[in-house]
Image (cartoon, rainbow, N blue to C red):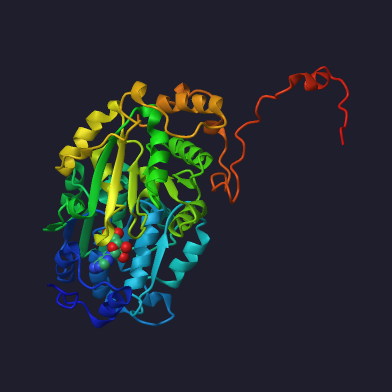
Length: 469
Ligand code: AMP
């Protein structure tokens, strides 16, 4: 069995690893660490959950260790390593790893991303940092404002390059790479390798070594399951599964921001504490939602692919695909949230008949046929489905929501012009809106039509409003 010591790591790093309780390197770590230590360019094929962050962070810190110093002079702490990540969550998580693994080395790190004020970041950069983790857009903002000097960056890491591509960051990434005149070593990590990623890799990696961990890592630690279901029954089925299987800590994926908001709202109405996270939410809202989810205060986190990127939740037991993703690669990313670092996990997909093509593409990618299991009462044909839930108080509203649900979920982003008038859709987001009912009941979406309109007639006619006490 290979140990971290066998990989040639220095005592400061071995101690930090021991503090974290890691006993042995994961496969990607065992492969990548010696190569990065030897100064090679590496193209790493690994998804989140495989231990990929440590596979580049540990050797990178070791390569910078000779520069470690406690001087207070900013000039003694130039940026020497740059890690680019697609989202602020991932960037923050990677920087947290840098801090943890590097805690016995006097090296400084910082994390910079958009959506927050620049000034605190400028102060940090001015004071000097050796390891900078950043999202591409904000990094370029700093470069443009001359608050960041990249002329001494020796090592660059592109983390989750496929996601950078999906998010349209590749032109920014190329511009950044062009600024790194002192670059000696480059690493690229990606869960999938499309032609475009390969092209990017070819353009900046020098004689790279490809290290890959079996994508089917999931085969051992994740159970995949498909519940065929009529589209309009998905929400009921989800509630049924969560309640009947006593599922806790469920990460649910929806394709659209509107879909996440609405589903979280509906789950709360059904007594299942849920929070939505997506790109429209502020960083502090996302962090709070994640904290509440991690602490168990919130049972379900409903997320879009983008928002869930980089979430590190140890041993998340369930991932549910409320909608199947457009690309099979996103499925791979989504299920990377469960069964992490050897823990067991279940990935459940609620698949309606119109999603079968997507399911086939996913099965082709993961080279696995996923078991289908119809939950009694929730078959793929709407007609055969019988409600198992207790009758709800507001059937009229639910019918309306059901109608809307059929309209767009799962079919990618809805065309706004086709989305019917739904108060839940158009309700402006307010912090706390989707917190569980016992903490703060979700506000009523719209005042219900008055039950006794005749009482208001005098007002409508301009008559006096009588105070009743
Ligand atoms: P990553 O794939 O980098 O997102 O890491 C997934 C999770 O595995 C993180 O929570 C790490 O803390 C954890 N981890 C990384 N390496 C190891 C290891 N060698 N042993 C146990 N857990 C690890």
